[in-house]
Length: 199
Image 1: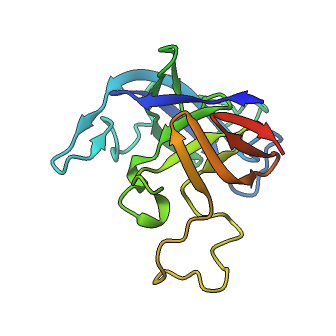
Image 2: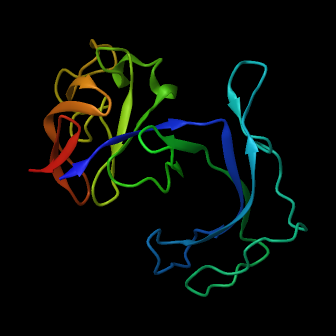
């Protein structure tokens, strides 16, 4: 059993210098390609002229001459000049129960967060107009209010059809109860009264 908890977006974003190589040269790490990041700093997120959240440096070209870029992948691969250079930003979240800071990338199983950027799409919202995601045991993410991977091609489910709900969500975060169960790439279980339970 895994107890769920809400993480809420903050106005801060850590920024990283990232190098990666994702072509034919394979890596034995978890991602399958060569990848490394070094923390640059943490900055305040701002709103652009359209009211969208923006991390300073979004869309700016990377500067290869800056000091601090990672030189090697953890597997030992040495990055080459033609490999990718990226200024990478992540959003900082705060646990509502403990105040602990994390990112979605580093969130533990049981972390649950609003996916507000999907809430303009009725196919990705619950009856309350909200869209939620939860980190399952084993690391898979479950878009509770999204479509199941085996549903989109189901007969009668088309873009013109009324919004189809693969799962029914009730309760208040983090104490959601959702039906039916979820099957991720390495875990099968239920979300019942805010607890992820093995099926």
